[in-house]
Length: 77
Image (cartoon, rainbow, N blue to C red; front, side, top):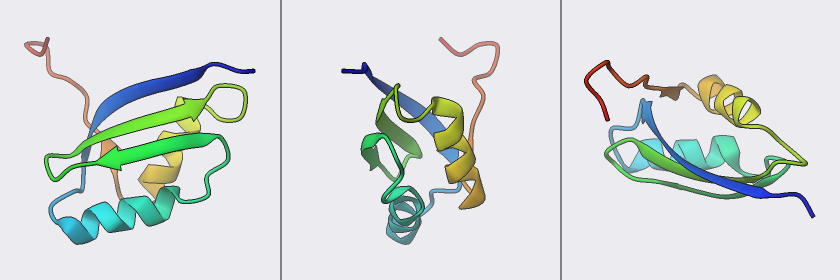
């Protein structure tokens, strides 16, 4: 059994409940995605099976829907 990785990332493009729904639609049925949860602050928690998909593949799928990972600034922890 492959390891499941869980990570919370900050993304741009989430401003309302419709945005959260649109993100869910983009990710629905994605091979290897175990769970996804987003909030209105743009935090998306993803859990995926490393043997079936990658973080990069999930980020690409979200980018196609208009959601992009925000890079932490130099003063971020």
